[in-house]
Length: 452
Image 1: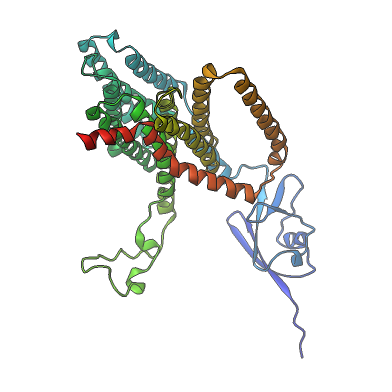
Image 2: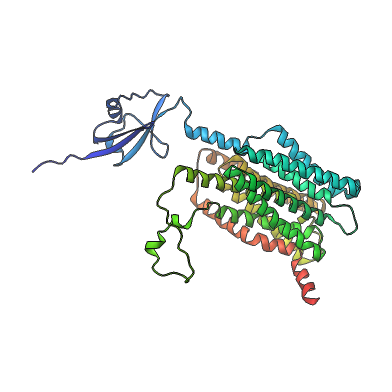
């Protein structure tokens, strides 16, 4: 009868080299590394598990699971993953001052044209609109033809110029209104984004522009529907604000686009077809690194564009959707209260799903704008007792937040609180659009249409 010695199978990755070892239980990792000619120095080299945890050289083989894969890493040399993270951060956050200037100019022109529609006559407006459209196409074509990933603010600047062109083109006529100007701006931005998505070379930029065009068309449909109904700007703005969390959640749920044949071998497992005309998806046996990279780039571009545009739309629509809470209609009042609560909560809780700082803080900034708009509408009409109670509540919330920063900064996480946040987020997303319709006085609009 022979004795069976238990051993551990361990794989050590050193750059492109792979060493498959079978170690006795009492052998240390340092001895295995020395056998391979690797002698890690403290602070310079390290042995890491797949989850990033460092493995000590004094650890024994029996402390590792069978089949463990360890990476030998040079800490003094930036890794390719860190370089990729820096490049991705540059795509999302790396912005140049000229694009900020272009974005500011487009936003100011649109704001001035909406606030003072009689500042220019019809002919100068048309010339200025033509110049803005041409500038947006030239700048967008330069970004698209370059073929590399453009920073987010560059795309936002181009679309801001296109939106300003549509707003400026609407003259100050009795038949025109702010709703028509916003509709024209959204439609122009959608057309420019669609044209640029066709000529773009980079997959990420093409997906971002295509998603921008689709979102602009959806919001333009909301504002365009308000024109034949003769609604004020507060109604489409309320629907836009309520639609933002729903659209953001829908975009996040449909980011990754892969062929159906990548999931299931339909030719083998589907014995009966749903219909006689059903075409079985093409069978895909493998996927390469280039294919995976293209899918990730397109999904990243779509997520970036949707987050920025929907956050900006929510922040811009909030002052018009929530002009005050002194209305005499109880349904509109309830809709405005629910709209402010649900959209702010949905944007604030939904920001937890992002890893990039800009994508986290854009929805949070939009939620902050909603809170500021609500406070500006309530404070002038509040009595001293209400203000005192509100100040006490804010003080208590600030104290609790200050105490929660310490464990959160040390990496403390709570699954129970996370599940609670998910429940409130889903409830807020589900109720935000109905609340927007109530705030837009959709019930009275339906009554008028039914009675006509």
